[in-house]
Picture 1: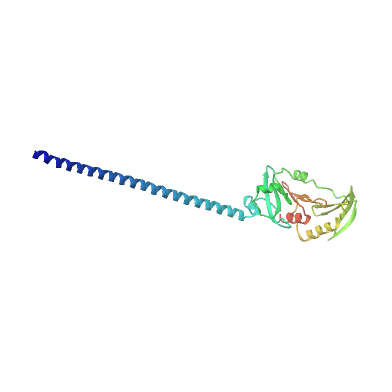
Picture 2: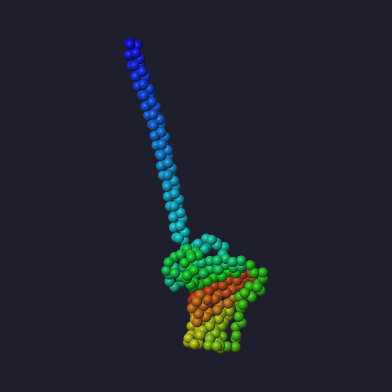
Length: 270
């Protein structure tokens, strides 16, 4: 009997010890699992924070780049993209902001100029809905001087018309035909024609004198052989005044709604 009562406490003691060991093991495993989970959570949070920070910096960088682009005018953008392209440096506009659209083809480069209330980027899609006030066409790569002359198509001044003194020792010849009045003269290699409408009661003489006075102070580009200026007083489009001249392999064309503005554009090519 004594031996049986002694065995019972021993068994109870072993059971308690085993239960305590199991709890300790479970606690250690739980602690290890928590620590691992907490470590992973902290790492995930750090990665998320780092990712968001990098993304924020990237977005800020993109925004800064976009701002820098919009700070440049369309004209500055074109010069930066085409630094060797010969083009007018002055484009007069009566109001608003100057905007540009440009396109290149196999044998030429075209620039359209717009006067709008807002500043837009070069080749902005909104320009498709607008009407340009001026244009510039640079045609290059001709094989011979004769080819450029054929493109320019110089006109012959009819000296059978009435002589008109434009000042500065410039004599023009005036004649009328089919409701129009033509005033033509020559300055160096440049041939100039001003057309007015008799129906609209237009007089070409005042404008012709303004052109002569302006060209006394400003110098047009020097053509190889021919240059021509055609002004249509009855045209309000961007083709109202055309200034065209040729070189052995190139042809330059400037147009504008306003005659003197077109001349300023051509003069700024020097």
